[in-house]
Length: 129
Image (cartoon, rainbow, N blue to C red; front, top):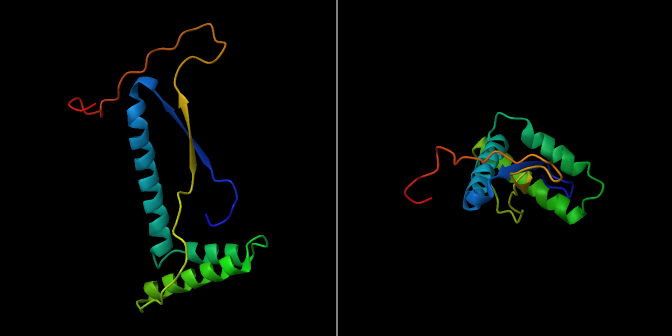
């Protein structure tokens, strides 16, 4: 999450006639993923924070200044989990733990068959969509 390594990619297949729904789905996906990451990081009962600390400490490609900033951030989080007042930290915020790639739904390129039309999902609001 803190390195330059490629993030897992989630392919979102969408109906091109419903393209306006795509940013909503992408946002909801980011929200729920970040909630899970946040719960894991800020919960005192998980080893996730220690694993991230070890990942930062053993990453040979990470600049020393960045390593120090992240270590201070982990220390501040540990203080909050312990119920003490944390010091100020200049650590960067979290980013989404994935990337997305959108693909219009339809027939495969070079396919002789035509695609079955995708129907609007039942959860789409009929008054505004």
